[in-house]
Image (cartoon, rainbow, N blue to C red; front, side, top):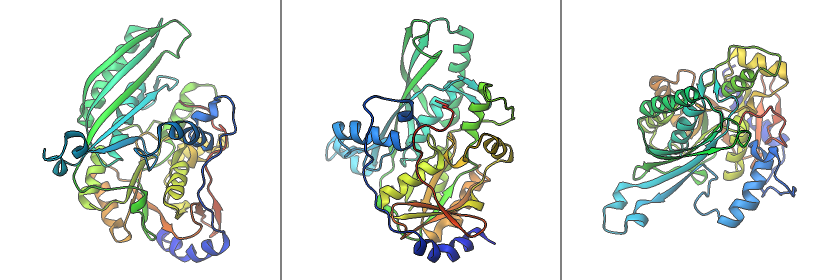
Length: 373
């Protein structure tokens, strides 16, 4: 059965069988920071909401994204042509992946692509990034050179400039070989608007490609799982894909890259932020055979595994075909519609299975996956 039709047919049953769930603030129950607070699940959300947002305020990041979007009129002042220029997007991120070189990429490429992608899914055209390095005493210079060269190639491919940076060296054992922190700036064109408030019932959910490749590639590269599989990270800059999507569908409702916590976490954030339900079609979500096999052997749900070159988009129902076609033409041949926005169950995510049943898809509780960053 066509995935789109199955979602349509099952919507009434999904809404009837699952009660309305309202979004609420996650409760912080811990007295100390744990590894779970960095896993991208409920513990991470509780930490951010109850410490950082509570103290700093949530006005700048109302949609919980990784980039702040600031109107240029407020920065440059009125009368400077800022209104027509759009908005400034800013983002920052830190990278602590182990191993620092893995199949399909390395920490340097990851740092550039991650920051470019955070800007792109905020609707911005990335322009420049900065990079700060924390180096462990004893790191081979040849390794550092490879990482920096990889960053330069990634920046050139994404069309951004690395314009400033900083370097610190810490004693042996004080960090795990190499940490990189990046910051980026980009420009959101005038009139481009995305966010939870734009989402409407009936909208379609698109994923730009297969999921779970990055997380499983890093896990395999560590060599401590007694499993070998030729899985490569999906790390890539998606700004070109995002611009192709906006060119085909100017009224894209929402964008987010599915990094820590995977697709399931992004969908739950989307449901909670919009107050609407998300119905996903299990059969439409692409997972490469080797990646799925590795997940099955380890008992890991690929919905929760990190991605580094895959993003989700919400588009109007009538624009879904044009959006997918644009992504295919721009270099994402496996982009597809995987679900829709529904009225019920409010603020929750359900997965429609191939057998016509449904199951709830919640955020991660604790830190059940092998850590990849």
